[in-house]
Image (cartoon, rainbow, N blue to C red; front, side):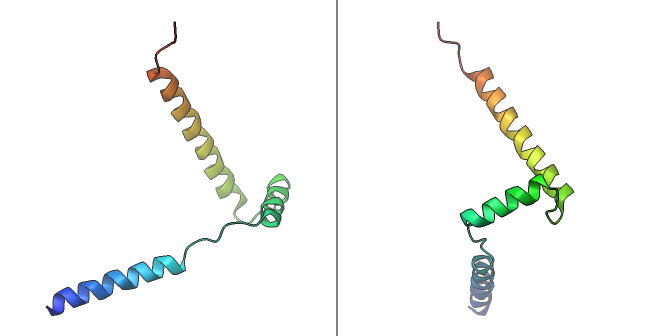
Amino acid sequence: MKRHNAALYAVLTLGLGLAACEKKPETPLEKVEDAVKDSLDTRPNEKLKDAAEDVQKAVESSAEAMKEAVTPDPK
């Protein structure tokens, strides 16, 4: 029974920890500020963020290409 309680406490602690770290949605002003900093290449960790954006675009492009490949042509 004690193991069960310890496991329960561990799960609750992790769950509360993750809930506390939830990212807040950006406000429109924060989005504009990020876009301006992005265009000026002055964001913190700019190279890392640019690489992540490139990966995101590549994944979206690949997903679209796969979707087109498996979708039959309408005749």
